[in-house]
Amino acid sequence: MESSRPTKKRKTQVRFNEDDDDALLKEAKMARSAAASGIDEEHTERDDLLADVLELFDDAETVEEEKKQAKEAKQRDDERADAMRDEAMTGMKGRTSKHDKFAELMAHVEERDEFARTVELKKR
Image 1: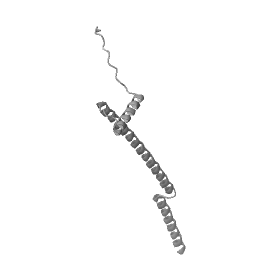
Image 2: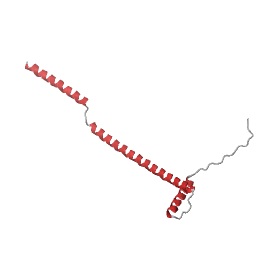
Image 3: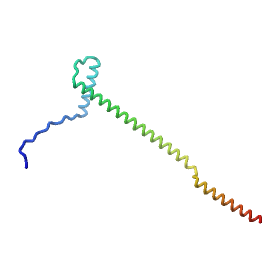
Image 4: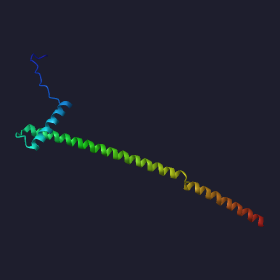
């Protein structure tokens, strides 16, 4: 069942692109400098909104820079930890484990006992 009602066209949404963002930011910066110099006499809601947009943009840049610095610090720490781990492992290569020393000690004790038995047998 098709309805015979005419379809309503929706109003197209306003989408901002980078050029629009840049234009708004430039306008906000100009408004800020005009207000600071005292030549801007009119203050509108649009000025407040542009100031908010500029503040949000500055905050976003700050957050992005902090994330970048944190990532670089983590990478430096990881590299330092890898270097320390490699250095520790290099030092461990020359060492023998307790198990290896125990086996050597047992072999020495057996040789000593065998030698002691042969000396004892020769004395008799």
